[in-house]
Length: 399
Length: 197
Image 1 (tube, chains in turn yellow, purple):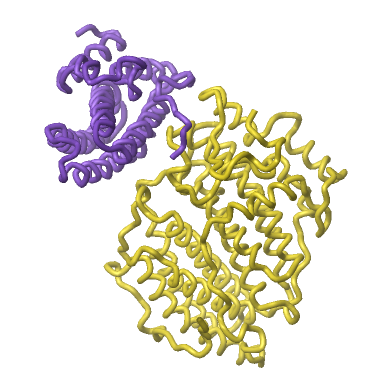
Image 2 (image 1 turned 180 degrees about the vertical axis):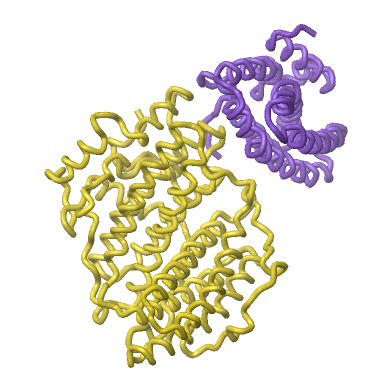
């Protein structure tokens, strides 16, 4: 279906403010919800957090007090949207359960984007990254069984497999090798801009989540694993943010942010199975249409350019949460041993990679390996969900 | 569902030197049993429900005997936190007693069980957040280990997996009614804590 957000009008901004009563949403039932409803909530929270942080950065670079006030008005509404969206998550979930859901988002969102991405260089960046989130899911799932005696399967519910990806210990690269080359803003497919912004925002929120919740654990292995994977999220944010063309003006970036929010709320509204959550996606889409119009006006005024010149003529196909098992197995079979060198990818452990590995591990096993050893000591096995058969890489099969 | 079997807390190979870690794993065991009851039907459901009732009874008894008294006297506000938890436990026990009188195939059984599942889960998280964190803060490794020993003694009263060869109804009956099980659990806990009777 075709939907052009530039041609739609939403709710006027002065009618978007919600009272406490309207903000008081009923959380989802963690044990009975559609796992992809939870994935959509986590994704949209990441998108709203990025919208808020981006607007703050823009305001800090903005000398005109009138524009600052305009940004503040929209941003306050976005802050309410973030509260409504993230407050759909239930208080009974533990941090580790939410973490496993974050990794399910990272796996199935990135895999879908990799499948749909038209630009081969960008596609490779997503393919590379998804095998790392896939391994994080496996490590956290083993930690979860140790601490709570529960299986990650109860969270991912057969939609996402849980088994080794590229081993976490190899994700620690020299920081300079995390910087990618950007797309060219005027030549690239508009869909590629939306993909880059979406994955960057999701990874940034994952980084924020781990850096703040990791120390709430008392178990030494849990604290250490969050520290290790938290640092890899820093690498991922570096990796994905460098895909975005830094030549885009502030106003162009603002327009892209608002357009992407319309795209995602529209996508999720189309697929949502929970009617109460669907109503929120619909309401927020109608709010975002107005934020987009305000951003477009700002771009016209301050850049003297037409937003249509940088946006797609209509919304791309809906972004979809769905199982990506076969696709992930293909990547596991072909790309598990990749690392980065400069802005490219190689198979050999080059000198800079080796030097980083030696320094950060300090001759010891990292937390991501020790969690497996501790799990084995407790249960005499590891935890996996391999619904589609053995691991495609024989070296990664359970001994 | 996965065919991997997670041993119940106290039965896995953890050192069990920390009462909080042990009780948190037991909270997971209880959730697993709720899932098992829900997934099963007929005689299997009946049998899984018996195990759930036993584990819940033993777990709550152990908490009432071991951790709540400690929490009550060991940190400021402990008294009120324990009062709140006991009120939740009392409500859960009442629902459990109602369910215990029903046949697991009764049409009202599952809706009530699902409501109990939610209440028990909220209760367990409240314990973890408002009581257990203080317990770890208020005692040393010796205290945590001593309490763990008492909880383990209690748990031995309610295996969540039927013992091979004795999983018949007769064996379950041999454990007796829930009230008697609670009494025996209290005795076992008090013995492990070094207070007889």
